[in-house]
Image 1: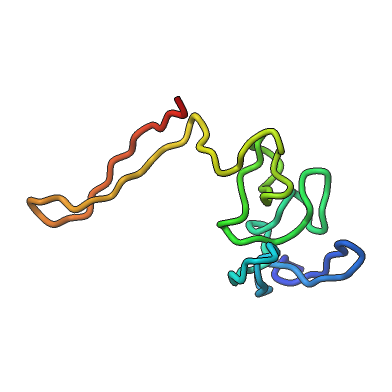
Image 2: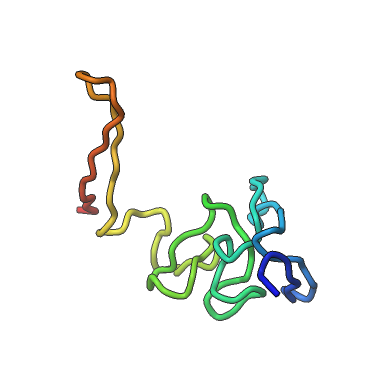
Length: 115
């Protein structure tokens, strides 16, 4: 038995989940195609838990949990004392560009500050 396809009881109904289950992002105004794997799950447990609603979201609508543990959070379940889109003080910024001499793609990594 694997986690490609299984059923989850969520909000009073059974839904199919797993990394082999295609679906749309659970954010109402988003039509992005996703797979219902654990990487798209809000919270830590399929079906929902104290950490999240158990919905499945695209990368644009899922954020690292504020305590950096217990999975990911959707924008509705994210800690309401923080802004999920704000850059964290330890964020890294990667900039890509073309080097003039060889026409190669290069990158630079710099620390980002909220100050």
